[in-house]
Length: 431
Ligand code: RM4
Ligand code: MN
Ligand code: MN
Image 1 (cartoon, rainbow, N blue to C red):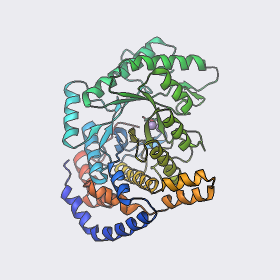
Image 2 (cartoon, rainbow, N blue to C red):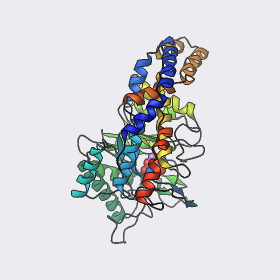
Image 3 (spheres, rainbow, N blue to C red):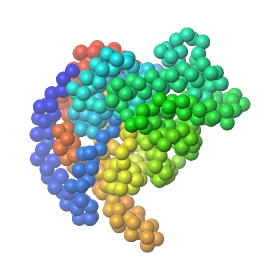
Image 4 (cartoon, rainbow, N blue to C red):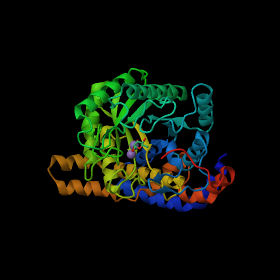
């Protein structure tokens, strides 16, 4: 599936004169508040968030799945979809693979996938190892199962299989040009007394150590916490404190990954971000939004102010820029076209970034020094309530992407074209 960039350009032309007048106004408003609007545009244009390979198919719940048309049939087609997404947003320049859902195989398979992605301008972000389902490649003999956990399992064979799977994922990542491994574990308990809290933690820590021994020197490894699901009584890596203990206990290049849906209700996530950044252990981010739990809803669709505050803490950590980290959108799409949801998620992220950049940090620091919370709120809200959409559109335009990505996606007829090519009932691997 080739992307016709001239169609994106045509769509931009239709909107160009409106865009220019909106932009001139937005630049005026922002400049007048003492923030350099041009710097905001440049920083938004620099930002990119990986698309996960599993999110270009329709997700499902345990109550069913309603596939849309033209779902990618293999990892190559997933990369095609992500290249289309990136052509529209200019801000999804990498893909994050989930193995074994997306396993091209070592050697020729990995080389072909890498070549395909390179031709489309897509790189490989963090690799995700899946040990929450039995994985035929490492548990072939059926005597080993992850039913009672992977790294935390009391069964040596299951632990060995999990370490071996992670080693394989690293090897694959090296061949693809990735630079990081994300370890999210489903390990935990469903029943009180089922296992020892301490024993499970110690086995996970030891297992991470074994995996870390395989991590190349120029790679990082991330521990991703989650309070519950699929383990509903306790998870081994349940919160950021545990995640930090695991990272610190494993090695220098092990950092914590914060998934926005992986916190108990009302957790102050921006504070978590600040703490982890303070100790140099903030390594990655999974963006989504939630109302109740790990709902994997569209970024910024439920709690946009929280997202703005979180991005503000990231800027704080990066000295006014987004710090180097593995940023990824981690969503599951049940109702929307997955590409449309990813377009909206990316746009919401860019908007939150622009709003956070529109906060006059000097004024905020002055208000903090003066113990003046009313003024501090005023400064924050001025950033949050600025209509930054023209600045974001301009950042996209400079990246050769679409002024209005969703309308453009529909206008170019991508979904209809892939449905014709792949079929109306193709099913992608993933959630
Ligand atoms: C988990 C977690 C992981 C993701 C899987 C699919 O809840 O968010 O990051 O890889 O889902
Ligand atoms: Mn995640
Ligand atoms: Mn999740």
